[in-house]
Length: 342
Ligand code: ADP
Ligand code: MG
Image 1 (cartoon, rainbow, N blue to C red):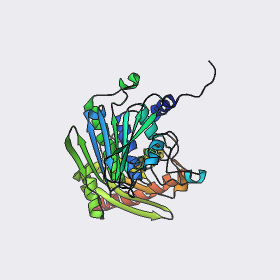
Image 2 (cartoon, rainbow, N blue to C red):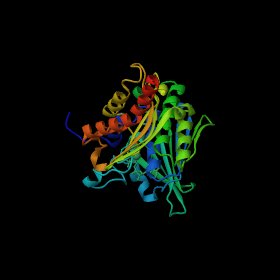
Image 3 (cartoon, protein in one colour):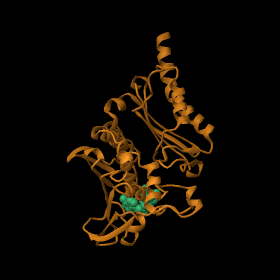
Image 4 (tube, helix red, strand yellow):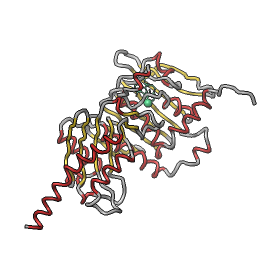
């Protein structure tokens, strides 16, 4: 066979293989877009675990009529334009792939009205060539993205979908993680017409703590130490569960780097070591921690799902986290020890 450029839909479906694993991955991409759009309020409506329908509605900046088609094209983004931007990423998205990928494996409708316009427009992705239909629509300022029949045209992928209940559990878990990444945004979650979660936007530290309690339980907040440490241009803050709050699974491990949900071996190692003497090997420490550092010191463009990052000074970050946590944990045990001795 001679070499040829792949048709757009096929190229997008190949890209979708990397970012769209299941309904929860679609929800992640759409909610992250809403966050990047400066939304104050985000509604997530799911039908049948996302098999049937995923709708994310926000009150963010919106997309103009002329940008609607572009928004659904691959490598089209408003978040990045130069190589320098790539080294200073402040948004959750930047690859310009999510909407193109999702629309290649579903029936996607993007409806939006920008702040400065009094009309809304709607774009529907349809057909093999990724052709987009743009028509007038009714919508308040902000954006809605509706994704119907995920994987309807990729039966091999569809086969891997789990039960509606399992898929919804993944969505719920993901939204909890996102809810703690951006405290100030109100997030509502409805499944099969039932409002299941309502995370109110928080402004004060007390409201923050209440939101953490709403997401992972009051018990966690009661059994945790609040942390806030600043060292040069690094800051680590949040809540560290006491050894009593350790769990049999990793479900209460929430770590954010510059507002992004991260699972990083190096960071987990640092935290684990700080607790080494104090919790059982079979248990996992629980925490909600935020690491903030200058964007040029961390590379987020490691993997399409962006769950991983690469620190330019990995050792330094590891040791910083460990030092801060040790300073929190150790005094409690020294006190206990002193009490036992006296
Ligand atoms: P990326 O987020 O990497 O830029 P996406 O495919 O997710 O790529 O989105 C493409 C573009 O569509 C974004 O850059 C943005 O300009 C626009 N967009 C997508 N969702 C929204 C939204 N909810 N509100 C405003 N603009 C949006
Ligand atoms: Mg995006």
